[in-house]
Amino acid sequence: MDRTFKRILPDEGATERLGNDIAAALRPGDAVLLHGDLGAGKTSLARAVIRSLAGDRALEVPSPTFTLVQNYALRFPVQHVDLYRLADPGEVEELALDEALEESVILVEWPERAPGTFADAIEVRLSEKDDGREAEITAQEEAAARLERAFRIRAFLETAGQGDAWRVHLVGDASARTYETIHPSAGTPLVLMNAPERRDEPVIRHGLPYSRIARLSRSVSAFVAVANALRRAGISAPEIYAQDLDQGLLLLEHLGTGSFLGSGGEPVAERYEAAARLLAYLHELEWPRSLPVPGEQDHVVPDYDHAAMAIETELLLDWYLPYVKGRDATAEERREFSGLWDELFRRLDKAEKSLVLRDYHSPNIIWREDRQGLDRLGVIDIQDAVCGPAAYDVASLALDGRATISPQLERTILDAYCAARTAPGFDRVAFEEAYAITAAQRNTKLLGIFVRLDRRDGKPAYLAHLPRIRGYLTRLFGHPALEDLAAFYQRHGVLDGEIE
Image (cartoon, rainbow, N blue to C red):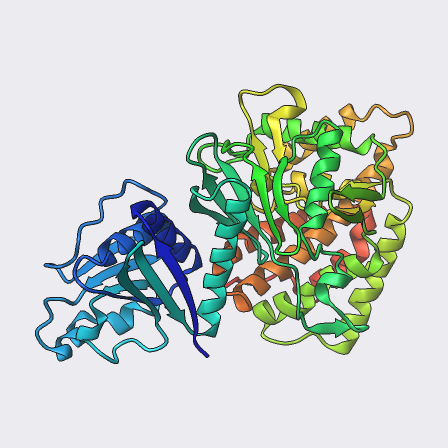
């Protein structure tokens, strides 16, 4: 079913913002058909879309009137097509636009010169009005939902006093969340977090979806609560400048662009040691379980309990094992696997507990060279924080899933953390056992998650991390607490063989 949106464009700035919003909604496979008379603004709108996808407001975008097709290698391929000079509709086949559409976005001016060429397209009709131009945008349900979300974000920015801001895609993470850099007409950049509440997830066990069992946050309220709590404790998490909790939208402080890794993507020992010391500071604080959220009831930090940790490890059987072995796990294998982890989780019950940020590794730590002390580290992606074994975040850092940590650097990180623990009750032997168990749990989970991201979500880039994760598990299996688990993995060839 088609849906239609109308926008009044009183000036070129409004046209640019419309292109900016349309660009935020586009995905490979989208064709955008631009209708209108000569001078109606089709090329101006196409330029705004292309510049937005390029993240370059000054990008040269020539009209394709004489070349027919102009290609751009941007975040995904884009083709800007002008069919005005097409003499015969049959000539459109020579442009091979149907093949390009499989991996590209195509912007088409004068699409009526080749009627019927593009099915299920987004259609934009531009017309002159007394108060400027009018754009009527029509799309089918799935694309219309994306456009509606983009327009909702613009409305949110207007409410926050940033209606004229220019939006640039920043990153999409391993979840459904996306982020944009927001460039105000004046002032420093901000970050938009776009995280609609989790809904309509399949039920997998005990009437609950995976996210509920794994204690994943369902709304941005958790981020607001944890970020505010961290800042109150002197830890640099983003300040929230505006929020729409119902829509899952936050306007955040931009903590900077400094990479936690070196220029070549290599781990920098100084930065990992600083991050370890920050964790030591965090783990010696008392954290309340109930955290306030402005305008809403308090957020209760959930327990990282046996059920949550177990459902994560099972991703190895559900996704990774079929990927590398070409078969499903047997019922007996599942029983043995579950029993081994149950015993390890019982041992973790005695470990030190603290606030666990859960994804404390290089993509989520910003290095701020110009700052001092704890302020040199900006922490993001904190919405899934739980109360659990303090060693978990140390394991996330010291065996970074996105950067190869040598055994020597791992030991340096652990030493830095333990040296910074000043509380008299800190027990390094107990910590090292909890570290080994939580690191094994996390890396087992990552094997399953990275395959799931490829197979279910169409994100194959994560498969490149599998050899690193397998190497970490092999290293961890030298700890006596993991002897039985190591034997299971070895017996069933979990870490053997080639990865596709």
